[in-house]
Image: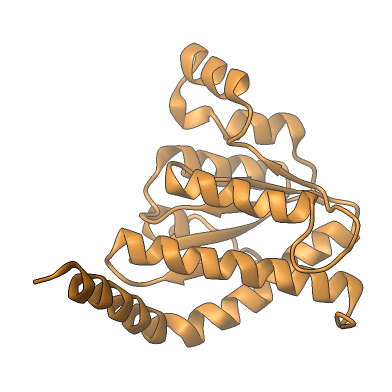
Length: 198
């Protein structure tokens, strides 16, 4: 098999996975975009976190908020809890890695804020602790998950929103999480600033 046919198979697999979850994921993404917008309109912030590739996705979202997405607008308050290396390593060293996001949320989070958490498995202890900490601070949660949602999906409250990419491939989940991230950014921009004028 040559490289070209292998790459095409990856592209086709992505399209198949996207088609299988599109309806559910698109609906949940729209509702989540409105939830995050409500926090911003209430002078809250969006705290975001994830591990590995999901950490990169959390920072990607934060950068789109703080700078801009596809239109000129003021920066919007978002904090990537993955970006402060001294804080992450001190919490992991002094306590436990599972606490790296939760301790930041307990210190920074307010009831008007929202947590945006990324996990492909739904089993990451640090994400589970982050969700619990957000609930302790009275925050609502948007969870981007994969597969069956894992324990993370089961500990959500009724007013939280899960965006589940119910496929088995971690790579495909992460790719669709990127599309969802951009959909959230677009929904927030539209909700806060209206239709973009060409």
